[in-house]
Amino acid sequence: MSHPLSIYAVSLYKMGLMDYRDAKKLAEIIIKIRLEKATAEEREMLLSWLDESESNRQTYKNIITGETLLKRLKLEEKLNESLDWEAVCGVVARKLMIKEFGRKAIFATSIAAGCIALMFAGWLFLSQHNEKELPASLAENSKVKLVMGSGKVISLDKEIPDSIDASAALIVNNEGELVYKAKENHEQKQPEVKNKIVTEIGGEYSFVLSDGTKVWLNALSEIEFPVNFHGDKRIVNLKGEGFFEVAHDSKRPFIVHSLNQTIQVLGTSFNIKAYENDRNIYTTLIEGSLSVGSGGSTVMLKPGMGSVCQRETNEITTSVANTDFATAWRTGYFMFNNADLDEILKVLSRWYGVSFIYDKPLAGSNTFSGRFSKYGDISTTLNSINLTGGPKFKIDSEGKTIHITPE
Image (cartoon, rainbow, N blue to C red; front, side):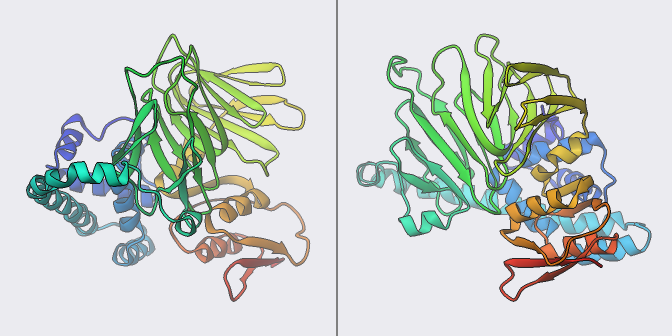
């Protein structure tokens, strides 16, 4: 599970009272991660803050892609990373405080507005039914969609309702993140209602299931789940990549079906990468324990271990895993360690929505290592691959097709 930035700092943040000292501490961690100097504990601290809300993740994205900060960091990197911590941390901390001030202002305004809002609450409930469905054209262009059991589609990156009645659960919008809250008086004998959350190219999303389990979805992924778990098992279906922090329940194991692989846990955190156009399914265990099964064979993983399931044969192999590389996508980065070029290009295609064409076959081994920002321009990543001995990349005029030729 994630370690908090500090109990004090996180509690302050939840109350909207983060001071400059806490903001500066968080700023230092953000910069250390950018310069690849952060410890594992510091990375977990950042993840804890990111997991607080969707608005935190958006603020983080704005910070690491900000032109002023990028220019300053680029200059400092050229100077052997002799970072002027006071100056650079000040830039980031002020951005965090501006965001925090905005939250306080909105909170104060909402108190006054609340009195007026109460006058119209009944009318809004009757006219909107607590479910604001966007026109089909807007939902189709959305990078993140909620597909209700009724078939209705709601765009989660356009306009999220404050709450949605999903029969067996109430879905609450918590700062851009959906939280499923089971209805205690719901009749368990009724048919199980399921929802889907789907991410498109360049989309990512996190939400909380009715049992308290938190899920993060990477780009081009889909998860189907009950709005309220029935029976003695908690079962979800995943395609693509997802990170799970499973709420412990000794009486009801949590089961993830991902293509031809099944994972069973009681309470733990792990990452699954199960894309339909990949030959393998990759599972990385961060904390706890889990069993990975496919085609009748089962293996057990311990923290820091990973498994590879070959989809054609159902064979499962295990090894020590680099958990940072497996979960880097949650903090806005791609990380590769001697990765095959084809695998790297698949990751880039899913995020940027581009197609790669080999103009000529490449000779020899083409494996690369590196760390790149997801929110940067794709040309930056491609230039880095080229400079480290990779091929040439030429992007077409529309920016959707990239030609590859030997250097």
